[in-house]
Length: 352
Ligand SMILES: Nc1ncnc2c1ncn2[C@@H]1O[C@H](COP(=O)(O)OP(=O)(O)OP(=O)(O)O)[C@@H](O)[C@H]1O
Ligand SMILES: [Mg+2]
Image (cartoon, rainbow, N blue to C red; front, side):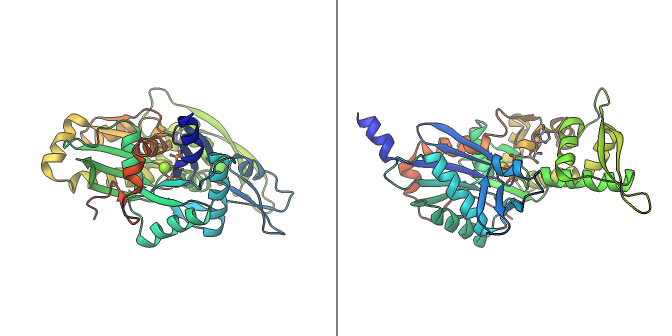
């Protein structure tokens, strides 16, 4: 009875507000929502028509006057009004209609976030119906979520490769001791593929085709067996009318296309190690690097990072759920969490 009452009264949720995907954790339940961070807007009335997966589906329906927007870019809010609306709908959907209290909300934000960015997220969540908002640094939540012992004085390293950003952090004794946040993630890989197809094959393709190529045959390290696929797009090479054309590309080409964004990620990883106190850095030889985020699933990226740093890199469990699982773990201690000052950034430590 008491538990049931508590479930109705207490309404604590954790949110991974990602560039590509938004996930919501409800305390006592777990992950209740996992949707693409898309909003479809009626171009005539400016009203929201759909959010999440429903909005993403509408992207293909060009006949209707609908604008499909991704309000988060490079890990931060790019369109405040649309983000408010998306958060409001996701929070309502996740916390159910029967709750008496407005929810207390924990949101993960990129470690490179500015003060203005922090306020934007807090205010957006309040407008979307939160009673209290606290923020946690995304790589800290991700490290918790993959099960790293963040309270250990030993250094533990997490690399979270999302759609908009790559977050690198070395954590010791409960806080981040060195971190890097760069605007190179899955989106940058997709863009690199678009540019490559244009330059090498004079073929114009869209972001969804680019993402498909990356997921189907993309790699960061030479594959034991070459993969290939047919790609359709618009021929840009001919004079006059542009016509559809198909070409076959292989994994070696895609790896070449991805080399720039991947070099930038590797540079961020090495910089975080370089700026870490030496005793902690030395311990990384034993603890290695744990990877998370959708981008960590790129073939051979673990191998390339291992070769490039000399530290053993592995993809952690549930890489796409790491951040939201981490917020869920922090909500286990909700009383302590929400009693911290409003401007606390959980996990926050040294930064450049
Ligand atoms: N198998 C795969 N191989 C390569 N990339 C993948 C794979 N699966 C998903 N991705 C990429 O992972 C990215 C999404 O990852 P994720 O959901 O962690 O991002 P996000 O948390 O929304 O973004 P951010 O943390 O930057 O705000 C997309 O760019 C997607 O294309
Ligand atoms: Mg993320």
